[in-house]
Length: 354
Image (tube, rainbow, N blue to C red; front, top):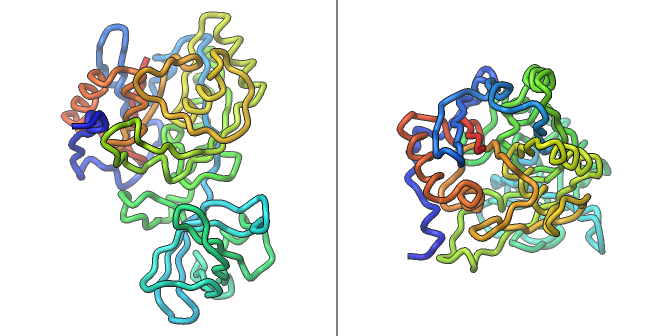
């Protein structure tokens, strides 16, 4: 048995949340206390009672792009589905889209795909041309219309729900609910799901209790959710994602630490950004790609507490939370959440590791 097997567990399919709760902050919250070894059942709305004056909540302000694409191949009429990943910024391919595609047959360079409007209006359909291949099996695609990607995706893009939610098919409220209330910087192929539980009212209550807020940005890529297929963690190739830890967040962390407060990362993406910025041993402003794989032996320099959803088995996210709180403790917490019928994954409940 390889060490990656240690991060596997049995996830009952019926516990995978298929819909968001009517109220974001009504999600259940399993409080995992590393000091006492205790597990306590609360709700996200209880955070003002669980955090202390002087603590700092750090959120990831990335914005989910409507990246799921649906259409057909113009030449054959065959069904085509894809996922917009990014716009190439440099080199001969600058301006081209990088997309993952799923279709029958073998598309060829030069083929066109007609993307169907998300509002069923043919006037909003858009054609793209497949102009080459990109790394990782993706395609380079060029929209026939001359318009920014964000504008085109607003016409033809769907919410990029993970496949474990209704097979990835969106409903009307997903456009709002699969997005945090503080989303600002467009660029993610998936939501930073721990942040989905927050509301403006909850932030107001936290501020009234003396809990401050700061932001980082990490654009979530698909690699976040991919299972570890290697037997050993040493052999896993970690995905890279673009992140930013701005100077004002660094200053807020320094103030928090100096007064004895705790830095509370909202989500694994916020944690990876903060710990990337602190790899020298002290948090510093950072902009660039990170392929940080937090696993046993990692020394944390920035984050004191973590608010996170329940994750898929055998993923780097399971390794991260298990490293922060110990593998044995997280295994016990997940067993407790399963017994208590917590809701798992993106639209599910959360845990607060203190």
